Image (cartoon, rainbow, N blue to C red; front, side, top):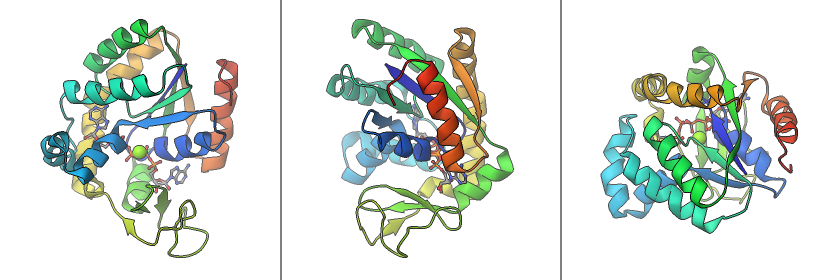
Length: 219
Ligand code: AP5
Ligand code: MG
């Protein structure tokens, strides 16, 4: 069964996915992470998407679907968190086709709600471990031991190129223009739960886990 985690840049999709993944019952698929890996590895896809992403725009739906199809093949039958996918109506339709072939379904769509001012504060303070990608924040979430990643012990940290204030504005605009319709689509199907994601990460995670249990996921 599939959980779609939905929300604007900085709403906490990655943070919540990490917390859920700790239980060992979920596979985390983030199209943003998959695209950044392609860029880091210098693949053909990475070369195509690098500039598009740095401007806060979306790469083509065909590229996104090729990445998703590979991941679904790898994780058939598992509980999957889709973080940041689907983001366009074309992706929704292509996803529906893929899922029907695999006899899988979207069991829940969680919409993480946070005010714009909080999003800016979260994004401008975010950094992550260069080695494993664990996400931190200058004030909200520092590593337990200063300068070393809690998850892998890595000593190098990076900031995302699309976390500049002007690019963030474009990402939020793109989200409102293209991705809101995806939420409306799932809402009409009765699959959407709205969560107040302005609370602290653990409280949000407890609310999220209640929704998952009600929807029949194993947490
Ligand atoms: P993607 O990587 O998915 O970025 P995004 O959607 O913009 O979301 P973010 O990763 O910035 O935020 P998040 O919600 O994960 O927040 P996080 O947990 O890190 O996509 C990047 C780009 O890739 C897109 O712009 C597009 O170009 C492309 N792309 C990806 N998928 C695509 C698709 N399907 N189709 C087309 N293009 C696609 O938290 C942020 C910060 O806040 C952290 O520092 C964290 O510590 C802190 N924080 C989190 N929760 C809390 C809390 N509750 N309280 C206080 N601080 C918190
Ligand atoms: Mg993320």
